[in-house]
Image 1 (spheres, rainbow, N blue to C red):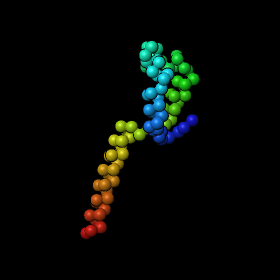
Image 2 (tube, helix red, strand yellow):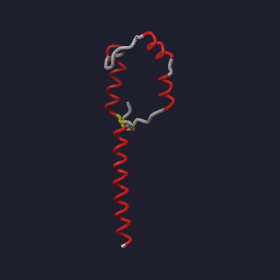
Image 3 (cartoon, rainbow, N blue to C red):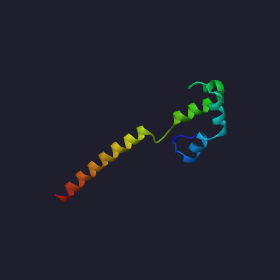
Amino acid sequence: MKIGLRIPSLTKRIAARTSWERYARHSLGLKAPRGWGWLTNPRKAAYNRIYYRTTFGIGKGCLVVMVVLAVVFYFCISVLIAAVKQ
């Protein structure tokens, strides 16, 4: 089981969206509602629940934090440069 940063894979994302299993399930209307994974495949649902609680991805939340840290870092560097110049 992975712990830490999830690294996104573009090829896996495209493969999941274009698989024949997904096409068949969507065209036949054999989808269960969101949150019912424990009913359709309990083992996979348990794995996914643990996986998404022990890892984190680079999403909107992390992006906002990274931008804020970059602004703070830039401000600190500019203050240090101004102090050195005097």
